[in-house]
Image (cartoon, rainbow, N blue to C red; front, side, top):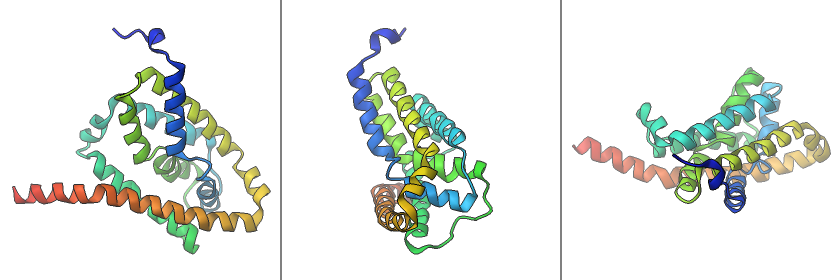
Length: 205
């Protein structure tokens, strides 16, 4: 039986926290969050944070078995997430309204905020990778620390918006929209080829 106290390692927690912080990139997602708030009217920082926490811890513990339960592999999951990110990027760059404006704050707090913006396919893949290097308890602590930071950012989003002003927000939206578009394309390209190859092999059989 695993002894949690003996597995606690400050170095592992720091390293895992840093990796997750970089992958989640909640600061870089502020323009996206502002856009979601505009479309939905408001979001719930608590709901978004708790749902993200549940997704991350659930995937950390059960891993790919969660997706296998629904007959979905990690590559299909990543490709699906890339489509949502791609749509969000187009909204930011072109000023289009691809997501329905009538979506409620409760719904928007889960999709697309909790998933795929916060706890997306990239984060889930990272969690699985971290398990091969760090003790699970240290990764869990790293996840919780990141969620606390995410909650604070979500609570302060309106203040950040007020500080930047309409002009600053418009510029940041365009810049981060292009970055988000690039991330979506990279996420799609790095998973689609293997996914389609696997599909072709299944058809041939």
